[in-house]
Length: 120
Image 1: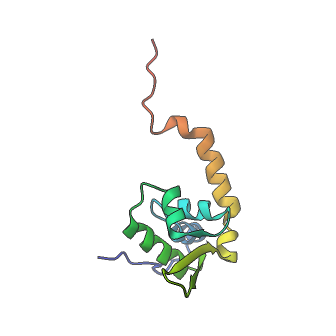
Image 2: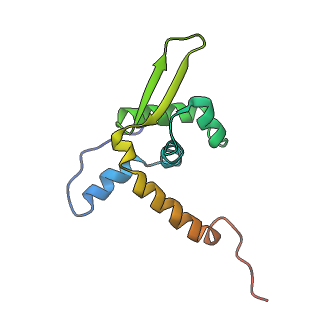
């Protein structure tokens, strides 16, 4: 069952945060957008940047990002088909947010995902 997308926001305090996070929610959307900061990528190139993502999930995430206007998809009429993904102007406007998330993650990655060292 597909999740309900873009439910009506109640515009209470925090509504704009809810809306922004709703566009990049999930495990992979912000990672995909981050990799597209460097420029246009084909499907296989994105998969190589994110080897843990399944083909189906990547396809779904790309479709949602395109539907939300954050990325642009360009299809070339060649055999085999060639499809390229790039950030739209709206997606590019998220660059400072994505870079801030990366900086925060770089500074704090040691707090998460690794077993904490026990004091001797």
